[in-house]
Image 1 (cartoon, helix red, strand yellow):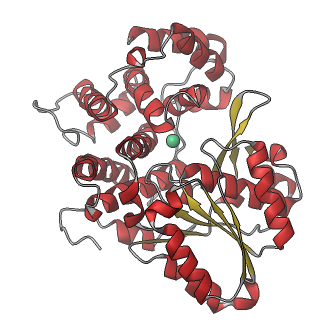
Image 2: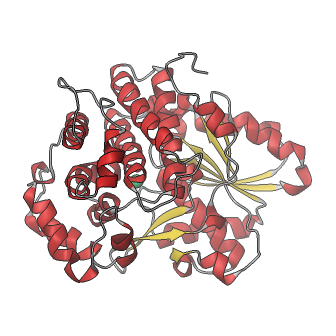
Image 3: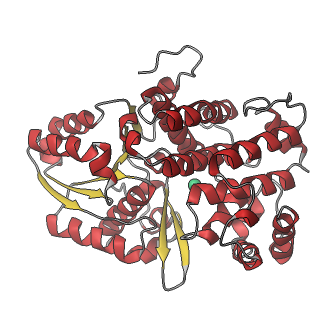
Length: 406
Ligand SMILES: [Fe+2]
């Protein structure tokens, strides 16, 4: 556990967060064992959902093996859930759950693995195809009053915050889009966050996931239309950004710096709490049009600056922006909202290695047109943006915002 007094007490935040039982630290997999052994009759068969290699390299697989040996239950493992899982990947997990008559689903991996497991566990219990879950609160509407069982999430990266969110992104290949399930019934019941698992991440993944967490926290902070809650407060969003500014350079200098890894994990989980209560807006919406071409976190972070500058016309956004004054490192004192956005953009450029969209090797202006056209299809996000957009003019305005910064 971190003992630096200048670091915010995120453990207290997690301890009192009611929607999810969050534990952060080394050895958190033991919690799962304790949980299962406490009521063995309720936990007789578990499906473990894992990705490609990260579970082995991170040490999570070894912890899982130890746990299975200690606890007396049937276990089934679904391997190789890919990044950007699609409908068939989720259906494969549903089949495994059905065949093993699982009482529990445990996801061990990054956001893709957790998202796929959340969707599969819900689809199985609802006896629906995963494609029928897309949209907002489908389960709550179709099954009023029903309490769905929820997964246990063990993140091995520090970015998406999926371990605490009601969201699952699944690719619909036939439609060529990434689609969203947003439902309180898929919030994991338990999040076991082990900073040690991040040590094996390649630098590129450390950066992309940290930038995802950074963007979640900033987009939530700028979401002036959503209600601030005690756990999703401006203070915590700012603290999380500070943790990333502190942790990311250290984790890149020394991948085994466990304090730095812990800061990144804490910031990612805080980001998840933030967006669970104060959803993301245009940067994330735009990033979905770039799936498969660039890491999600990098895409969202690259789009953050242009949209943030557009939002600054709103006085309330200016005010929120100033809460981040001097959080990002810069040579000059950050006296205006523009200074803060410039410092954030410089930080993103430094670590992603890309200053703007047009610097991407595969960039063409059709990318901008696609982002703008796709975004116009989501009137809900446009209306809830810090500076709302009218669907009729959204394509033109978004295209203008992005082309201005090429
Ligand atoms: Fe994200």
